[in-house]
Image 1 (spheres, rainbow, N blue to C red):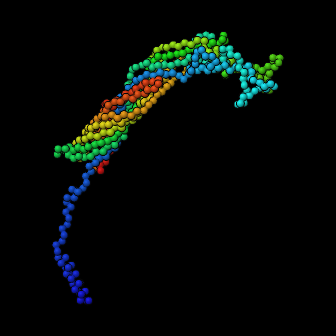
Image 2: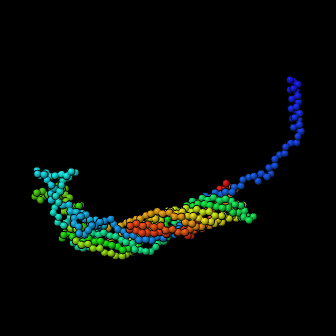
Image 3: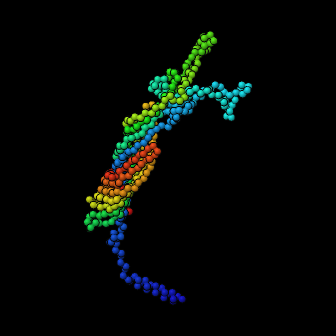
Length: 415
């Protein structure tokens, strides 16, 4: 056994000696290591893109009227609404219904049951607001309703406001161009910008005025504004049975606030007339568009190195604009009496428009993988129309993206 161990030990020593006597293995050559370093081919750009707004034009017609209802001129003792007052059914009573013992009767809701007077063509419920209503026809109160039909067919245009939007783009380096210093890449990007345009002005319109004259039955017109349900009050002195003034404990004379008796008005109009005039000062129309549009673009980019860190590029290609906006038109009519009559219509729409773009950019490489850029933009697309149609209005707008220019700037990262 010992002899076997000795043989094995000597054999191992012999193998180690032979191993040591062999030539050493060569050291690897790392001189061509640069050939295996990855060179970034993709560039991500993000920043801002400022563009001039598209041109917008607005046109259309509409009818503006109040919500009042004067009713038929021949109906009697009905509720009538006007732009500068109203007339209510007569509420005068001679008494309330009573039981056999003389106590008042009550309805299911706990109210007394009135006995109205015999209709006499008059009412104690009415209002008017402006002095000229009593001056228009002495002895009468003139109550009116108004409407206006816009007949202006002209179109009003405005260049939309420019906006600064977000830009995101990616490009792929495609190598040298014809073995020159020039290189080229394929680029694609997206931008979002605002749509904002509005116009406002006086428009020509046909103005229709309905006039109902109500008789005061020989009584002088009360001072406007007047509400027969809240008639003017007078301060009168309190007197005793002998007509002598009554005084308070502090020596001041006692006084009472006494309401005037309501003035009665004819419950239906004595006459009704309708007149139409045309002017370009009473109606104001304001149109506005507010929304946003996405610009998707793709095309080749040509690069020219200027120095180790400065490069210039020109990019051209196709765009696709996805635009969406809210179109609102409000119109206001200021009649002879009463407050302004106001109405508004609004609607939304979206469109897709093809177009083109061209960018000229200067880039400064801060590091081999990062840089900053700035440049000029030119792009164009088609136009689209947006309409608003209701029972009383028909408006249209046109937005043109034909010639837009602007500025772009941001950062780049290669990976």
